[in-house]
Image 1 (spheres, rainbow, N blue to C red):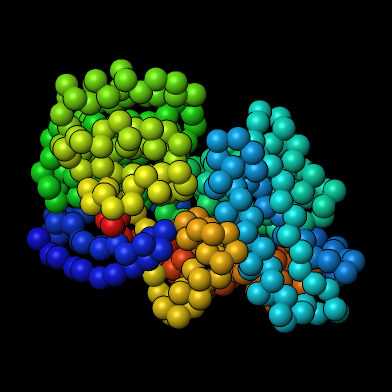
Image 2: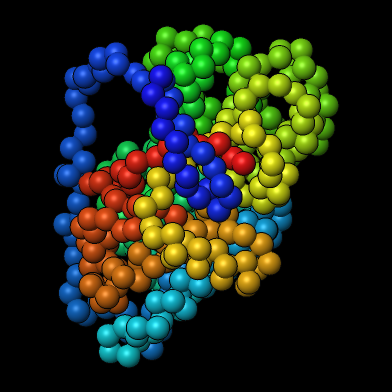
Length: 387
């Protein structure tokens, strides 16, 4: 077993990254693969006549601004506004300045879709940034592809970049990457066999759980036991009873932060390691999980200067009264990445898409962002332990 210990910032607490067991077995070569470099946009709208005019160039943010995930949404808005202010220190060409416009993704599918369309048509946003919600990402992807607007997303659903749409860019590790890291540590690194997978019954929960089951199957490991939670979660007692009976060595949670919080509070005395999907790394879970040492997740290898990261943490805390989550740092980076692309492309959506697609590497406060030809962030990630 190869042990690597390095310090990285995850939700800007101290965490320790440990490499899993070294896998020296030969990899099965695929019989075919998608040419990621071939995913491109060859359509119109790059001409100057399609530039967005006016004194403001707006970046749109679709986030949960009410309901159970309001704390998450508020943090994303605060981080995005900080990025706008930082980029505004150097004005854009022709005297234009950046502005943020945020709309709410909460509610039924139709309402979220309408809010996304309003960002593009009424607010005339040059690009969109979405939260970790897979539904909002899919809706934004559809609108962006139809109307020609770049979308930068925190959603982990791998299918968003598997359908040859050139307008979407993901800056986080997708479900397949997370599942692979979890499975390697659980089944090979620790040789666990009693594994319980708990997922929500929504799109994100199903997609993530399926990726973990596939990762286990590829390792020829026993299929995990699985509990699917219907939302809203009103009673955790039946789930807690099942956990006590099953006594899992590893508990994999593919849920929202709210659901993960309820589960963690109920199993506080249980043994076993907990593996947490990226979507749950928000408040209120972060406060409840602080100090617990058996919780693992996947995070980027941070490559930004420590001083820049520390300055971001201090400023965010001064503004909001709390430390930033990893998602807040990623939204900050997403907005700054878009703004820097605008300095190259000018206020044009298609040319901005080109600038994002050809950007080689961006070193942000959340880590490295380096897109492949399909819009995936190909930067390295690590399995990390919350402390």
